Every structure is written in structure tokens, then in C-alpha cells.
Image (cartoon, rainbow, N blue to C red; front, top):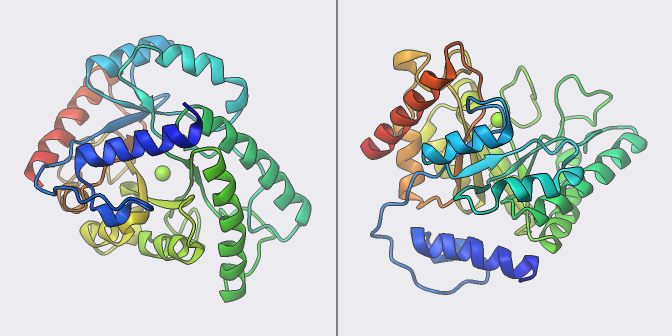
Amino acid sequence: MDRRTFLKTSFAGTVLATTVPATWLAGCTTEVSTSQTPPLRLSFQENTAPGETLTERLDFMEAHGVVGLEPSGRGLGDRLNELQQALRGRNIQISAICAGFSGFILAEDPTVRATFDRTMKEIIAAAGELGSTGVIMVPAFNQQTPVMPHNADTRAYLVEQLTLLGEYALQHGTTVILEPLNRSEAFYLRQVADAASICRDTACDGVRCMGDFWHMTAEESSDYGALYSGGPYLRHIHIASRGKRRMPGEDGERDNYVEGFRALKQMNYPYYVSFECGSTGDRAQTVPAALTLLRTQWDQA
Ligand code: MG
């Protein structure tokens, strides 16, 4: 099976099983039912689960029904065999690849942009080999300077460059996923709707976006509205506690995700909700507690 076929069958199979609106699948005209409730597909980054080794962490994840792994993109091309071997025979797939490139796309300096382009493409190619839904990227962190001005011309440049990158990602059976962050990290792109409108303007199926509950806590007026605004462009979700970015539940009553989950369920969102957080407690306890909390809230949504 080549990568394009894999992408089509794995995504479309997921979609059909979880009843996404057919209009959200480019090139798919099959009418599908919307009567079923989609499953909550949980994913961890590599350091989320307790355990000393990747094998121990994957064993823990499997035992607790976590079906996605989100590795960093740093050095991903050298880890293909390791990750493929580690996941062989398991009910865990690569959910997304978290950044890991050098340089940035909105750098004023063309050599920094070239570094971004080269390293990002290496990660995209590796992500495709691993069957990842996409590679997460941020257009510019606040500390990355000199940066292009935050104006309409820069947005047009970003759309143009993302279109090229998205086409490259599609050739490798994956996507690039724009991540909005909170203003203290990246003022350039802060809200899911803004990221989704950039995706729309590329008109490229290889350019997608995501929502991160941690950043949304600071930037969005509505979890429901934010995630729903991602529409067909929403490809990934990050989750953490809403006060200190720990395991969901470690910030008590604040850790309510029900409205956001309601949007995902109504959208028949078929992709992953992935932990991106630390923990102040013993992970052997805090991680299973977080899983229980999220599954309970998913059922409530
Ligand atoms: Mg994030």
C-alpha cells in the first residue's frame, strides 16, 4: 500500500466508522450516517505515561486504552525504525508529530526560512512514513526575531508558503497542522478560527489546524465556538489542566472540557485528543485519573 492509499484508507476508514460529514472529506461524496457518537481517541506525547522506556510507556498506554502516540519531530528521520518496531502489533498509531524543525516560516532572514523549509520537509517525509495525521507547526514564536510584520502582506505570504508545504505534505500522505498558541508564546496566531481561515485560504487539503485547550483557556471566549470554528480543517487537539498545564484534573474544577467535547462530538471529529502536559503528582495515579476524567466528560458532552 503506498502512502497516498494508506492516507485515504486510514483517514476515510476512520471517518466512515466515526461518521464525519461527507462534505468534510475532499473528494469523498459518500453519504454517511451521523447518528453514532464518535469515540474519544486519546493520545500521549512520549513523556506522558509513567515508565522508564518507550516500551514500558507504550505498555501502560495500551493497558489504559490510549490509542495515539505524538512524538517530537526532532530527529524523527533517524527514529523511523525504532518507532515502527515499537508500535508493531500494538493498538497504538502515530497521532501527530509535534514540531521539531529549526528556523521558522515567517523569518525576515531568508537563510532562516530556508532552514525551516529543509528541516520541516525532512520531518514531513518521516511523518508520512509513520502514517501521522500531520506535523504540528507554529508560524512564529514571540522570541523568534527578526520576524515579518504582523500585517496582511505577511498573511498572504504565509498562505502562499503553506500551500506549497501542504502540497509537499500531501505527496507524503500527511499534512501540516497550524497550532494557535496563547499571546505570551506566539502573538501571531492565537485563535482556532484564525488558523482555520488560513487553512481555508490555502485551498489545500494538506494544510490543517488544531486546538489546544491550554492555550484556548487564555485566548478563546468559548471552547465550543473555538473548536466548532475549526470545522473541516480541525485535525488535532492538545489537552492539559487549565491552571498550570498539568494532567487534566490537577487544577480541580477548572478542568472542564465538556463544552469543547460537545463541539467535537457534534462535528463527529475523528482524530485525536493528545495530552501535552506535565504532572505534579505520581503519574501512576495522575495519568489514569486524568483518563477517567476525560472519558467521563466526553460521555457528559
Ligand atoms: Mg500544544
